Amino acid sequence: MKILKATLEDLETVSVLFDLYRQFYEQNPDIESAKIFIKERIENNESVIFLALENDNVNNKGMGFVQLYPVFTSVGMKRMWILNDLFVHEDHRKKGVAEALIMAAKELAKETNAKSLILETHSSNHSAQKLYDKTGFKKDDEHFYYYLEV
Image (cartoon, rainbow, N blue to C red; front, side):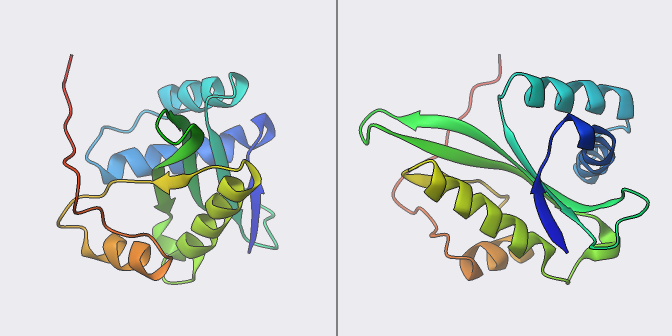
């Protein structure tokens, strides 16, 4: 497996995975909107996407991806990265793909002198929680998470 930072050349591969990711979260398939969304993120430098590919990737099919968004901490006066999307194609689960993608995200955080990587997961997503524990994430029991739909 190889991990690379996605560029516009990888748009098709990332878009297919992104659309599958959204379907996992019970969204309707919409590959055209997925392409537009991912293209805008890459062109505008609004996120960093790492893509996992098989070493002999002839068909340009991705194994998985992780998408990170930059934010800043005013108190810490540093960048942080939100690990917003992590997805591994069902054909490639249990092969270490998610862990490799998280390691790429950690390396990005180090390279950009970030304070931390942050993420959220559903309280019922025990397999993801195991992965995050395994890769060094700590559960925050001190803060509450709020959101406001507008």
